[in-house]
Amino acid sequence: MIKKEEQVIENQGTRHKEYAVLLAVAVIIFDVIFRNTTSTPFLVVINLVSLGAILYSAFSVVRHADIFAHRLGEPYGSLILSLSVVILEVSLITAVMTSGSSAAENGGVSPYATLMRDTLYSLIMLVTSGFVGVSLLLGGRKFRTQHVNLAGVTQYLTGIIPLVFVVLILPSVLPSGTYSNGQLLVVAFLSAALYAVFLIIQTKTHQNLFIYAHEDQDEDHEGVPSPHSNIWHGVWLVVHLISVVAITKVDSTPLETLLGNLEAPKALTGLIVAILIFAPEGLGAIRAVLANDLQRAINMYFGSVLATISLTVPAVVIISLLTGNNIVLGLDMVDAMLLIGIFILCQATFASGRTNQVDGVAHLVIFGAYLMMILS
Image (cartoon, rainbow, N blue to C red; front, side, top):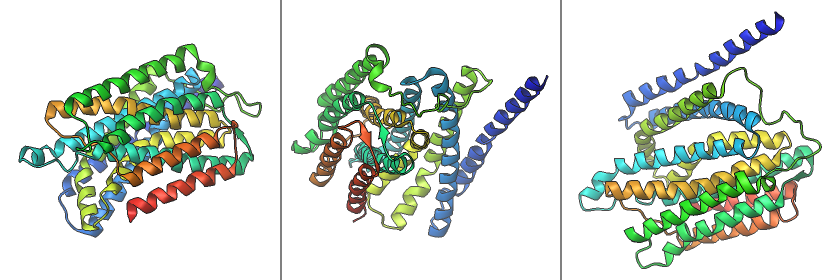
């Protein structure tokens, strides 16, 4: 009898949490009504309200993904969040790019032609230097030393580095600074093919490379048990993801106006989009680190980077070709050097399979340099 009452209370509490979607609806209506305002103070308010709603929905995404992680275990749990990031990125980039199609139709180049490049670059730097740095610093402070499966990290970097080279660095040495339509299709195919093979390795043949069982870990650290079915959590996870996409879409005009009023650097747009996209996964990864599960955090961090590049490029390339939008991929020399630097540091950080606070600070140094360059 007592257990039945506790389950009823837990069910009611879970349902109550889902009313958070009402906040997203209210913010969307608010943004639609006031999206054309040009007042800088009011634009700041609009964007702060939107950011709060996005983060609130992101927490809900993490909550439902944690349930799947608890039930499915690694690496499937982190894969769910990685695919969520890809869905967010493709949705946001294509929505914003298509909104700038009129510029291309009038004979010019769409102002959003570099959006995928800027967002991919910003996401890579945000994750590998920013979030990884904060996680290693917090984990090192709490546990002194944390452990990770070196072979798994190596597999991630083996997949990420060639994609970064082909997608972001190689085009910069071409006369046009990007690929032709035919070359874009080849790059899209190569990206998707590499990820398909990686998924086989991660989920079928070499699962042990992406798991590290530490004696200090709590066996329930991956999530909180729930009385609801997988369908229930899957539906609500999608609903909250849609909420994030919808809020970001309607807030794109106020955000663009605000950045224009403030004369903010163009590269800052890519960083903002990357932060919005990675919010759900970043929150989940930091929680894993604080539970002394660095391996799951690394799976989420590097898994999201690999999945984002591998799946966003084919999706956006196909959509851009169908809609007639241009894509510019090549990075400039400074950005390329920062990418090379962070991947060299990643190799050094995880070479021993053990991390501490110094590793976190080292990554944050690169992140600080990245922020310095985009804000200068």
